[in-house]
Length: 611
Image (cartoon, rainbow, N blue to C red; front, side, top):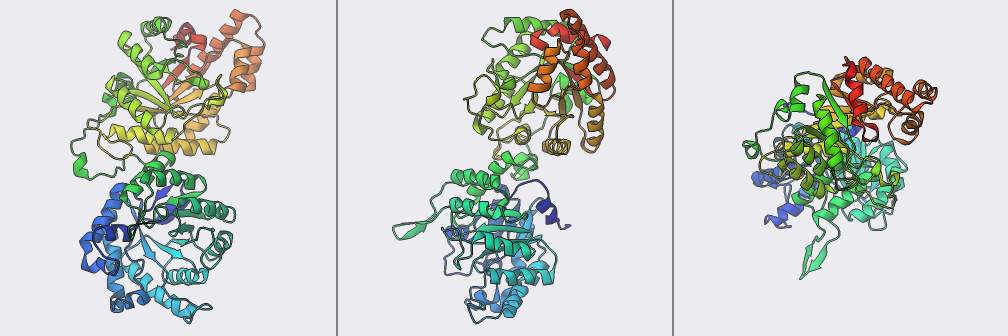
């Protein structure tokens, strides 16, 4: 199997998950602390391999070899110094086999357990040669990177870095350990050791062990200020407590996952666990990362293939009539209507019937647009489909519900027969009439695409089977006129990678910018539906240009609308602009979504007259 290049993981925009504790898990399986845990690579390989597989199933992107103490000095205490190569080689191969094609293998190297000069009798040259022995055996086993962890002495980790660099050019994750005051036991502060590790060429600089996530978060924030290197964090499961003479780690997996989010927000690109953490903790961290990290592919589930054998994923063309038409390459039409403000949907139903009679393929139902409180999108979409027999494209945003609520909503929507979904992040509450309302935003639209993709594969966000899979046809929003087009492109790429099947643009008034954007996404293009908004007045154009996020109305369009003062003439000018746009984009995109200003669907139907 070809070795994966961990350097791509260092430079991309994803967040990656390390595994958790090995010693904690070995102890829980009956291995006493007076045993050499590293020797288990030879004496009980099945146990070690099984724990590696547990972490892979939990969602770890990187697993560490069981070689933390497999150096000449520490092995000599057990009379195993002649087995350095065998133990390290076996440790690397066990992890390599468990990792499969998705997961990286990190060669774990810890401190020597002795003091080196100037604090002890061991010279730096001798220390480096001891590290070099371990490095060479791990390299032979086929690792992807080296992780130097739980170091307190910067001079010692410097020799470990040099030993790796003498032997290979694989990436190095260099992790120090701190005390509750934020400094190492040698008194070195985070800003000092971070600068040193940066100078010495560590690819990733981080912290692990000794403290829980709270103290680690404080230190990480200081580290972020003094380096451009990527950061990592693997906290203990809190601090151990003594219960009837035994030490226990009491922090819950949910607590660790909450702090994982904070560590990521503070700059950590690599997160995992150390002492006291288990596969349950890593599973919760992986779930948190899946929600926050755009690059995680929800199709890369963490279950054995045999558990997926009964899941029959719905083909795209069979998900809905809307999906079938797009899959065949046919041009689709849809109209966006605004849900009722109250509980009476009668007027809306009349409007939708007009659209159906006009031959429109689907109705787009926004989810609390501009942070306004209206009838729920699932209820509206269900009413439309059941009472009119026309397919709805249900917009669904991340603003108002946490992960549990979203999962419940989507399962309910699937049970009601809803299939077409447009996934959006959502406008913040401060834009709407209730600025004191709070927003959730557990995940953004990219994370939600991952989540829905999992549901479509019969799994919840934690990788647990849900029975029959959902059959959502997943769309996403995109803005060809974004202020930062590079960022918009990256987010689009992440959405496609996560499983998006089509995209709908913001209202398009500048076809030139749309063409440029379509050229830039050719490498990852999915069907694109262009948004069109028929303007009804100059004030309407001004409002869109200045108060609706993501909408760009060129000066030329504003000038055309400004020249028309008569109400009816303004409406005709707005329709003319919309029709011209539709004609220009007809051969560029897979369809159009026309908005119905102020709920007047006839405006939208009038736009389609040029087709």
